[in-house]
Amino acid sequence: MSLFGVLDISASGLTAQRLRMDLIANNIANINTTHTGELTPSGNPIPYSRQVAVFVPRAQETPFASVLGKTIGEKNLGNGVQVARIKRISDAEDPFHLEYNPSSPDAATVAEPGLPVGYVRQPNVNIVTEMVNMISASRAYEANVTALNVSKSMASKALEIGRG
Image (cartoon, rainbow, N blue to C red; front, side, top):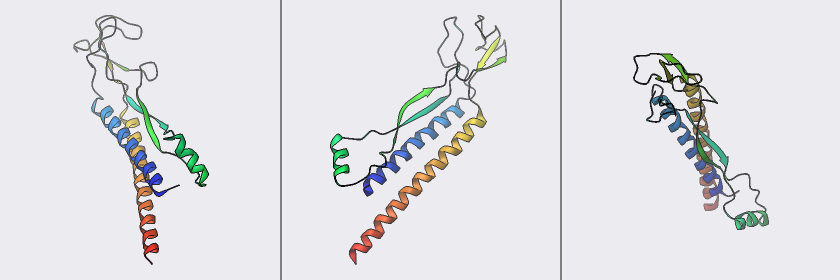
């Protein structure tokens, strides 16, 4: 694997983890958002839904790069990661929390399955889960920074050897 390939893989990891941390921060910021402007068919407000990033491995950039790598004996250990999409966690996957507050402007005015009149749907964001995910994303980011710095250090040492 070439030096630039290693740097590219670390850079893709850094970008992906930064986006993950941004989504977590957005989730925490909207922990009390009970009305997003969307309404159910019955006319009740829909609260904020938690968002997560879905990562997938990056595909080989070109078939030529793959063939060239095999020809010169370079084993392709990976091409990094990319965000395939940002997924909203639905009420079916992680139910909204209900709070009885009939005086709230976001309280249900029409009964729906699982939502009695007078209850307010609270977002499906759990602060403990978000903080654990934030720590995980932060550690993954730090690991990618470390890999990037080690790669730079190895390249610098190789150049010093070449200078003689």
